[in-house]
Image 1 (cartoon, rainbow, N blue to C red):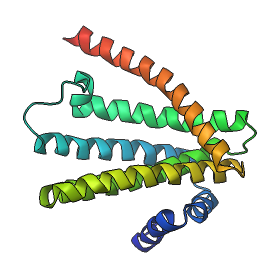
Image 2 (tube, rainbow, N blue to C red):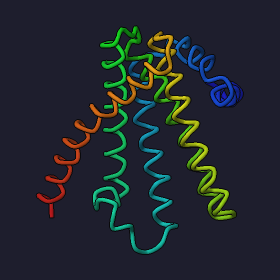
Image 3 (cartoon, rainbow, N blue to C red):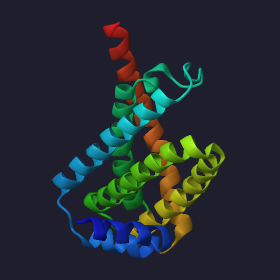
Length: 195
């Protein structure tokens, strides 16, 4: 994958997510390579998050769990969340009649994480120059990112119905919350045990 290809796919994802999903799935990338890419995106997003923490105010928000205030804790949590996202979207989609295999969902989620990384870097720069524009970008990107995810899930599973795909995402999200609660419990126990 060269820069020109990634740039073109980036543009296509924003303007024609269904065609972008077909293109990503059509690459037929190896499962091991895709898992590595997903974990790498989690680590890189964790590094950008660490940078954002360093740039922010001295005191972290009291609403944020202490575990997520650590770059390492956040990275482990994010990687766990990504793995659970891939598994739940694959499983729930199959349960409602979808046809996607795990590598297809994995490829789409890994690509979305790449987009997220690019967006986070752009936000860091924008927040320094124009904080209000950065907040607007966050809002627009959140909504459009959700639309892209729904279209990606619909295309991968061949559901032919974006509402059904949205249902898969909601059920997957609920399943992911259960899994993340378990991960946070284990990480919290490790942190408390190490303290």
